[in-house]
Image (cartoon, rainbow, N blue to C red; front, side):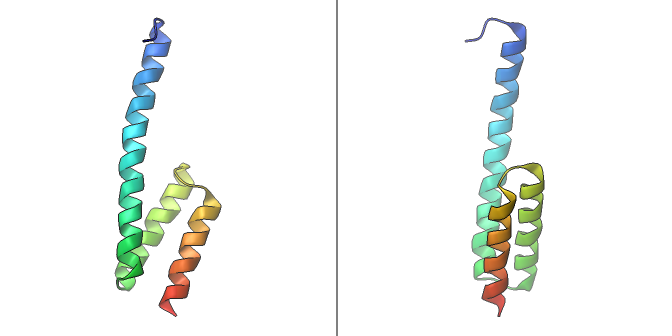
Length: 76
């Protein structure tokens, strides 16, 4: 356990961020699975989540682009 107040605060913040990131990544993976076998509306929702995840730094922007490209190919 950290002793300094700032280290304690950092630990609280990092735990909260980890929980938040885990939930968002899980939602993103679920949306991608639904979009791969779903309709255009679900694909659009997945693309929005990918854009947001890349913008927020949850996933790398190239990874988001790769997933978006794969979804676009599946529609053709």
